[in-house]
Image (cartoon, rainbow, N blue to C red; front, top):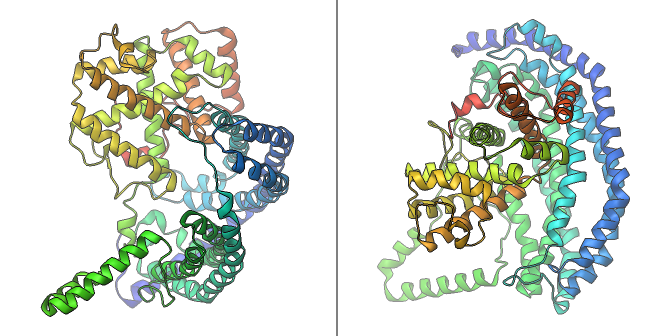
Length: 591
């Protein structure tokens, strides 16, 4: 859109925007008042009922698994058994408070945001969408939140506990602590928690007015000049809403700082234990405040660094610093001319801060998530046509809610295929479509996704060295779906083109590692919901195409789930799989 130029143009842009924004705000507020209580009630009563109802089972099973597991040493097991009742007893209270606040926030903001999104670009019949969006969808979304909580409490929790009580391998050692270190770390934690809470909260409160005023200044400048986040037409309706809600963001930042300060204090005790030093724990206590101060300075574009001291809290860092100081002293006495060179070499380099347009190029987690399920859908159709997935496999997953071939092996094959494709194209990252490459620069800034990207890039480099041929790739599809893949001899009668046992063993290790990654991903509640919808869509699609003869009972159950809204299937096959973010990723072709 054309950006206004000059004072009069910017003034007219602002004046013409006000009535448009006020009408949308009033309409969204009315819908929030009418629909919000219903959605809040669903979230509050649904989540509270599930968590409190399963609390006795969780309490008993958690204690049983902690006492039975071999992964925890005796001392840590006794200490956990003593301290565990406190969080378990607080769980129902936290569940009630969290469900109440979450329900109120969801019921108030979702209808409001949906009203503003209805006037964005690409929306037809904007008037109707302004009135309809955020009504039924908000209630359905609240039900989805409750379903995800149910999945977590019924499936993810028990899957995690099953992993905890599994037998350890021969090369694994139980996690334990040394009693002699506990008094030191406990004392540091008791000192650090009140100090860090007071200091970090004081820094956050001191800088909150600056955050409020700078935020308002930036948002108003971008609104009037149509720059930054309001350059695109689709973002303009959110301008006034962002200005109004900015104080809530500031308050949320202060509250988050307060609660995070407790973690800093606890980590000081952990540092004292890890370094076996009372001094290192206190050093981290001081350094944590300096780290927070420096972070807020960078966030608010204030002075570079922090005026607070930042002592070293790792013995290795202290030794490295002493070595560097000794080298500098030696250089200062030996070669004065070289001293200046060393000084410039160690001078801190100022990096340009990221602009909004640079940040917006980073992929969102939902885009990676959508690609993953879209790839599972496409590969599921191919494996179904080849007979590697049967009607019995899908019926087992639909009825029991679990099945290794579908929930673990199919996603693992999708990721492996992506890695093979990226390795063959000599891509520095992961090639998830013809025109989208995932690298460290555009990977979602999310801790969970960060933990995934590193191992996948390492595996991709391993695949590049293995030099997988087309015949081997076609054979891997069958092997990953049907074989155990535990030792090279498992592939003797499989028809795998290569007889190299080293190559076979490496591929089997990669397959097992990918299956482990997928098993951890399956603990996410939304994974099970979306994958269940995908399997139901493929099942009905295969029956309608005559590819399989499904059970009448299962078919009736799937149709009942779809009719009730728990398994929505879109026009293109899979519900809840291909979202609006697919357009940003282009035409995904992983098969």
